[in-house]
Image (cartoon, rainbow, N blue to C red; front, side, top):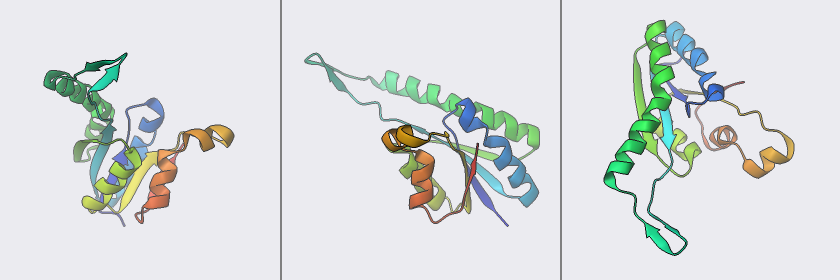
Length: 144
């Protein structure tokens, strides 16, 4: 069935709702699991004509903070008894990072939640889930 499942989460309650589905499926299939969270770039920026430099310490603190997005997955994997590899990547386009991690890790299933936007808000804000489904040849299990 499946041998390597990638579970994508941003640490939100909605995204974490997909976690039990992915972990239970992995347990049933005897699959390994990679949990992935994507952190945005933290770059220097200009504010009111002043260049604000982001220090190495600030970048490391941000990386550590974002790593907590994976705490829920770690806890649930331990409860279910599934071995888990937790990964954090930096990208301005989360869907690309998810697809890249799944393809690069030879995953045969991606599990993620849908934010449930419809109508105009879906058109304006788009959907990382939709982009993953559209640009990836790996099966995607979408939960709500």
